[in-house]
Image (cartoon, rainbow, N blue to C red):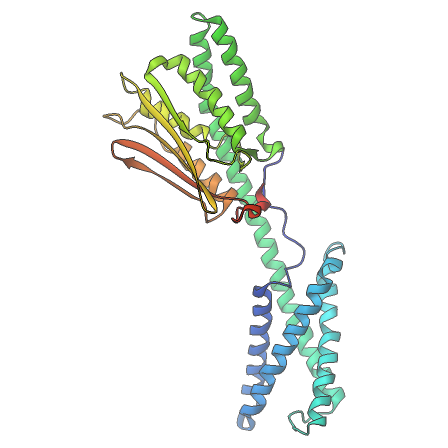
Length: 353
């Protein structure tokens, strides 16, 4: 079975990105500075400035070449993409050094005292050493991200497994109570439970569902609770403004609604209202689940359900997603703000669908 997790990191970094260009520029500038400082009393500020300009030009040329050839490099197996990228750096540096030496001679600037062959050779050797170090850094960073993703997958699996037993026991108790009272309602409840458990047990291999599917599952869950609690449970829905095809992890909202019923309605003799509201706010959707606060906290509440929702939301949508919970005006309110997918102007994590 498989969770909706990020794809494995590419074997190569995105050479077209600004962080890679910045890394190469910084490394080249540091190398030029070290060479300049090693000159001792023969330091030349103008030569240092030209050297910084030269390494910046080299970094830009290397990034352009590797960016253009990255699709081809990615087709290579194993560690060959890194080896091929390293081998490409040296001819780029060699050609650029030869051109720079020629320009220095043509303009009679006298900045390069060595012959062309020596100048090109030294620059290629320096580029080979620095290139190997930088590519090694990129490889280690990719492996670290892969291990971090594996740890996160394990945590999410544990959190999802912790949700299911709690929901299972409550649901089976509801069915048991319905059988002697209303067999038809009990049969309908079993059908609702079948759909809920199909979503719970099949989420690993099915990936994300949609908001519309999640709301349909909530209707089934609330129908079961309505039979158990009767008129004590009132539900207010204002969710029509939300995009029904919004990608949502399965059974993300159900634990929150279950908490609202268990901790907000069940302890009250007179019952109360569970409100579900949702709106679209710019590049995100906002969902609010609220329930009345009982005079004393219900027993058995340890925050696992809310904590698991927080972590699943953070894993699926990234840092722009927000989950808030707390009392507000005599009611307990849980608010979720989830970024819309890229195609709609947000930056929800497409790699986690």
